[in-house]
Amino acid sequence: MRTPERITERGTQSPTDAPMFGRGNIAGWQRTLFALTLLSASTGTALGQFPDRDAPFLPSPVRSVSTVPPNGDVNPYGVAFVPDNFLIGTGPLKHGDILVSNFNNSANLQGTGTTIVRVPASGSPTVFFQGAAPLGLSTALGTLQYGFVIVGNAPSVDGTSATAGPGSLLVINNQGKLIQTFKSAWIQSPWDMALVDHGDRAIAFVTNALTGTVSRLDFSVNSGGLKLLSATTIASGYVHRGDPVTFFVAPTGLVYDERRDKLYVASTGDNAVFEVRDASGRKSSDGLGSVVYQDNVHLHGALGLAEAPNGHLLVTNNDGINPDPNQPSEIVEFTKEGNFVKEISVDPAPGGSFGLAVKVKDDRAIFAAVDDNSSTLTIWKLNLE
Image (tube, rainbow, N blue to C red; front, side):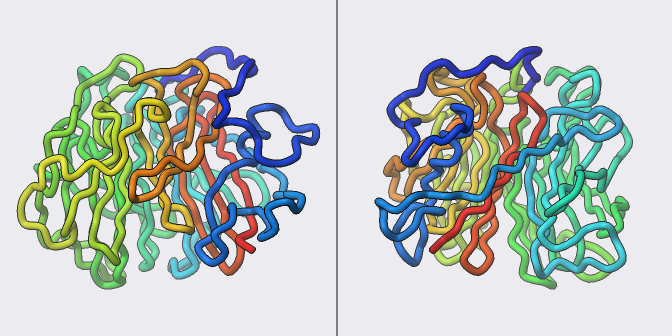
């Protein structure tokens, strides 16, 4: 989504935006962010909140960093953590780093960004990868424990969807070097991705913006790279079209529940989240799947998707569908049974909420989300106890 020239302070809040805890001296939209109600699976209390609901809430300070690299790329899309089982080698990545992919170039042309930025636990962000233009690195960003970063690209010749190409999946090693490019009929402008890492085997579930489908790509993996074993369309029929503001209106965010073998799909144009059953073994399309969450009060173009520590789902909204000026750039939390829990705003202007990721380690959860409007990544460290 294109970056507005000016961001103004949000003037009003809807009731669901109201902070749950003390306000202090924090700006309005930042206060709302502190009220994120991810729930602890072990205690059933709000993530970051003490078990006693009346106790004071003292979250770690918000850290917000620019994701603009030296070449000027903007519009951050994908967010991925470097997990503890990732093979570091002698490369620049460290466990706990956060990677962010950029979709626009310095001229703010969509589908032309070429960089992945590394955000360390402390210190300034650096460039992890820079490819040849145009790429348009999308929300399809993830890692494999063999030391590979996988990223999708949805390239455009002139920054519009009219010239968008099918793109590919890029495999980048832990040195930041491109080692493989996967193109196929099952990769059609990969808009987002869920990676399932089983060591020597991996599955990439991919949403395709050009076709409104979800593909499952099965790979074998070794230290030399990936080998595509099979590919299948497992869901189809989602609204998909080019858009002058959002580039594509298409199925986007994916979360895979391995225990239930269900794939959750956030479809922007349908303004809903669906579930696809038997996702890992399905041999044919399940169509749209079944509706899990459809809520025109709180959904405004369902986009990125992540799973909270309690198993709830978090969906971002692009504000291009069913917009509400009182609910800009929202992240909505809901249960897998389709019950609304909470929403927060990442920016006082619309169109800022896109990629997000959650990492849980011991009794601490780290939550990271991009703001497309300001080309920043905001990070929260929240206690689970």
